[in-house]
Length: 568
Image 1 (cartoon, rainbow, N blue to C red):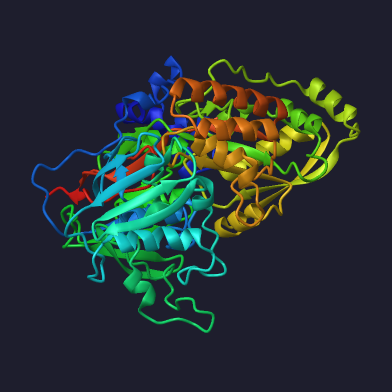
Image 2: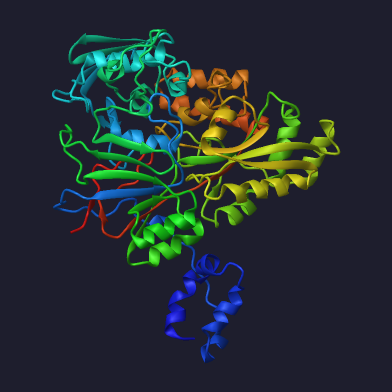
């Protein structure tokens, strides 16, 4: 075999799929084989994610300027940080806005941001924050205590003038129900008072919905007849972050420019462009050609191609995420736990991971990922058992099966690298036990809206960590308080009373060992009652041009580009 072919063998399977999907791999191999072909085929070694770095090299002397273009799976839905729930919107707003506290670079640890220091009362019900001097919004107005109060009150008060009738503010509902009031003590001091203890309160303040917004921007166009501000903040956001919003052409690009007055130091790049490129193959080709400089969600089968290309750089990090199948427990037949258990026994996670994740993911046992503190290590997943699944269906009165539907998104996520293939695998698994599934591909913003309203029977979705706390998965995704039609993140609409009691108790104690025991019991109940079937946890991968410096994968929160530069 010639040397060139031997060097290509590890990446040929993926290359063949890209270049000639209808041509057998054996034929392509034979085209390059000579006498050495008799020695037999070489196999591609599996990619070791642990050997990948989560960041690009730093530039010791980064030069300012240039436009950095980020290729992504889809467009944002809106840019009001208080009202977004999807990752495509979050990655934009985390660059426009600041929060009181933030994640340390590439970490889940909390550090000061707009607040430089804080204190808390002995019972942890009162938190007082001192604001940074000199921070301003992009419109020149000061980031003061009144702006902080405004940013939280608009989420709490349904009658607030900066709240539109269509606003849901579901993240506030998920994470700040314990918040009684926010007060400006003076221009630089703000006080938060809780009704009851809430263990994740400080890290929750790093959530994007806690971004501090400009009251001046909201008031700039006056009020309508109902007393609400006319300014369309969701389309023209104004924050205090490292980048300033410039323009948004739907499904084409969102353009931000560097905030040269940023309190934390100006970004190195002059402009930041978010470009939706839905097809991952097209996205990779654009990266290879240099028309984009970085991308999310490369196809898993292309990782070796990226890693071996000297003009590209592959980054990787263990994912804190879960892909799951949600069954609407308020609709027949999924109101019967035996039906849900039958579905759980029918699904072949290993086959899904082989077919849809290129064996690059881990089977998920709980809705709390293995990579998250609080995961119940004693849980043992079900072994696929078609016969048992059929018996459970028969006992529930569905011996002949039934018809149902499964919705899945049209874009990739870190937890769902191949949505269509995953849905097809689930459809095939359930067909074996008599459940006939109509699978339906849905546009990203449409599926978010429809599933939160409870219009589905089954849906294929996922969740990535916003903060490093099991509450962010178990309470947000499975507590009855988050099963409100129109704002639900609990897409199974599961309303288990004991789980609700356990999750609230876990929120109200600061004793980690006690919290861990409470989450363990909750996960055991959820495993038995099966409102969802956790499918997989996948690593986070990014691909960059080799000359990109300073980019870092954050394990939670969003995408951050302030430190990105180009090698000169």
